[in-house]
Image (cartoon, rainbow, N blue to C red; front, side, top):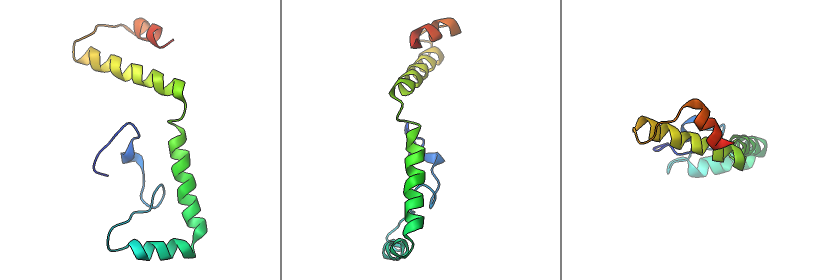
Length: 90
């Protein structure tokens, strides 16, 4: 992976959460997964399980607020104590 986003791509593992494809192995991998559909489904299911952690909208909202509060705190744009931060997310 060349960049990291909210989805934490750096935690994804090749051939566990996705099939690592390049121009040289594309047809080989297609043939492999046609011959091994259970392994292809396992990768798909692993990817779905990884994504599940981001599907709780309320939790994601709260995490986003905490990230913003931390950013504003460390950039000295906002002074909050722990109690005030907890009040924001409730």
